[in-house]
Amino acid sequence: MTVPHLNRPLVLEAPLRAGDGAGGYIRDWQVRGVLWAEVTAGTGRAAADFATTVSRVPYRITVRAAPHGAASRPVAGQRFRDGDRLFQITAVAERDSRARYLTCFATEETAS
Image 1 (cartoon, helix red, strand yellow):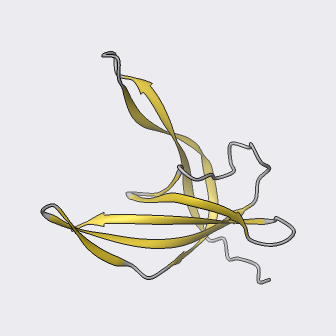
Image 2: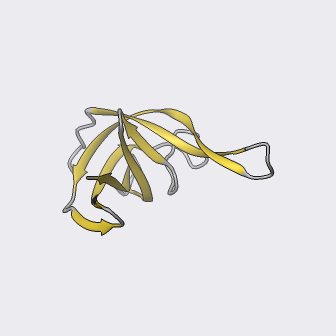
């Protein structure tokens, strides 16, 4: 196994439901920490969505592993932020047999 080049800081965010005062809720995001990552893009595709075109690009984002249940361990449903860019995490798997790294499968969507 080659050692990943963790050269990019990404902010890990988890969804947070907060009451809106009218019986419903709003979804906000809570910062869980900054993780250094290796980000590798896959093959993107574009799809028409109403009056705009949405571009979806899959990514493999590799980070150092953290114990199960730790706030710094990514899980599906969370996201990474890099400035204005958002990477929605769809799945997480251990990258190596010694569980030193995690591979996060994520998608970035942009509208044009």
